[in-house]
Each structure stands twice: as C-alpha cells, then as structure tokens.
Length: 134
Image (cartoon, rainbow, N blue to C red; front, side):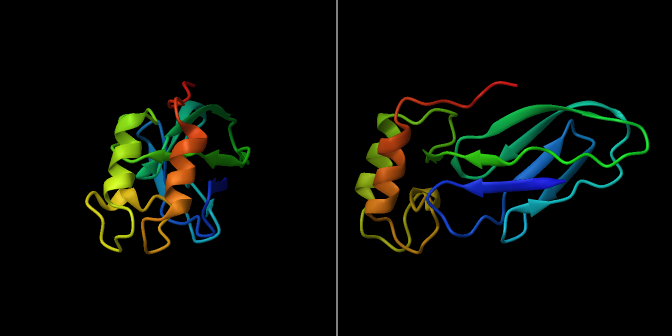
C-alpha cells in the first residue's frame, strides 16, 4: 500500500500501480492504493499516468506481512508518453493552448479541463527529465 501524488494537480486518482505483473491497482482520488495478494518476493513496482513520467521502485514483500511503500510523486510533462519531457511535449501543449478538448488529451497534463499556463509550466519545470530507472 502507499500513496502517489501528481505534480501540479489536486486530483491524484487514476494512476496505475503494478507489481511485477502479479498485481495492479488504480489510485483513489487522494492517491492511495492497495495491492492485494502479492506473494513474498522482490518486485519492480511501476507507477504510470498519461502525461506524467512513469516511476519505478524496487520493493521486497516479506512473508505474512503488509508493506507500506514510500510516497511517490510523478513529474508532469510527458505528453507523448516517450519517457522524456522534451521539445515535442512543449509543442503539443503549445498547439493545444486554450483548448478544453486537446488532441492528444494528455496535453491537459494536470486534468483541470483546459490546456493552460499550468500545463506549460509542468513541461518547462521538467524539460530534459526522463523516467527514473529502478
């Protein structure tokens, strides 16, 4: 179990959390999640949300115990999902600026209903960053 937050957003629901293909869950509105029935082993736990850089952590689940994972904060700006915040993402947000139904939909990175300055800021803040490796 644990909690995920989305940079630049007040809504933290909808993040997919998966553990080694064994179990997966989607975060609640507050970012909390629970992966049930995970056998004891070491797993790569991956956190994914469109418009954000995915994140991965290694976790060892001990026999007969619950494991609380550290909080994870996903960085925004990866509009095209290539695991890098770059000029392409900036262009996609820019050409959709002011739209409430952007194409791609992930150009509204923080999901506030419009592509606006907040989305441009997320790309700018994270420009050059890529997905962390486990």
